[in-house]
Length: 218
Figure 1 (cartoon, rainbow, N blue to C red):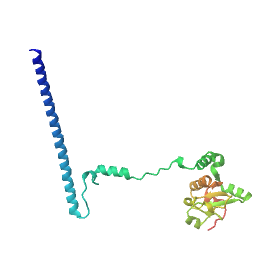
Figure 2 (cartoon, rainbow, N blue to C red; figure 1 turned 60 degrees about the horizontal axis):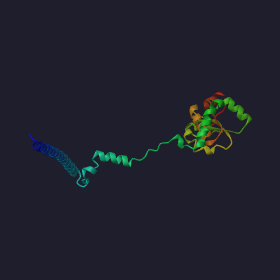
Figure 3 (cartoon, rainbow, N blue to C red; figure 1 turned 180 degrees about the horizontal axis):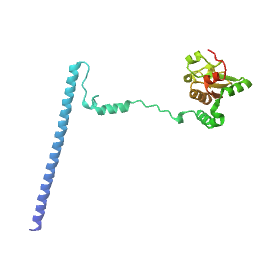
Figure 4 (cartoon, rainbow, N blue to C red; figure 1 turned 120 degrees about the horizontal axis):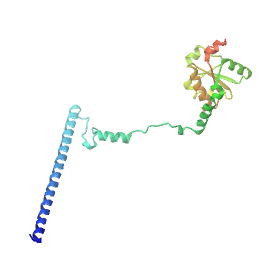
């Protein structure tokens, strides 16, 4: 077999391979088109069924939409929810005023050195006897205050301690009591940090006051 015949054979083989590859590509494209058409037929059939069901329920309540933009399409729901969701407001310590942060830091660091801002009834009576520049705040609910309270106490329930802080006379030291003492401690921290007031917990509250033989008002 001479060189010409070899070249012709190679050319024929190359042509056959090209034809076979073209056939495979055509077959693959046909299969893809068939699958796509089947999917579209299924979608069209589903749309028709949905429209039919909704029209039977309420003829004027539904207007047909393409599946790609239909509210029944889960992908559309997810995209809509992501696009229209309101941002969640997240409070951060960094958003608080720097002076409040500094006051809170000072309050916590000085607590141990100040007896955790606790005053016994005896200590309060001794201090207020030497210096009458004191105010007493009853941080209990109004109904408990009405039943009985320490004489001359101002009733500011714990939940109102910020909004009603201004009724406490300026410049006075403050003894706060409540039931339990933990509520008074919250009030004291609020008064010191946000009000800049010299406040203390009257330890034991109204029960300790009575136990000390002191009178109550109602």
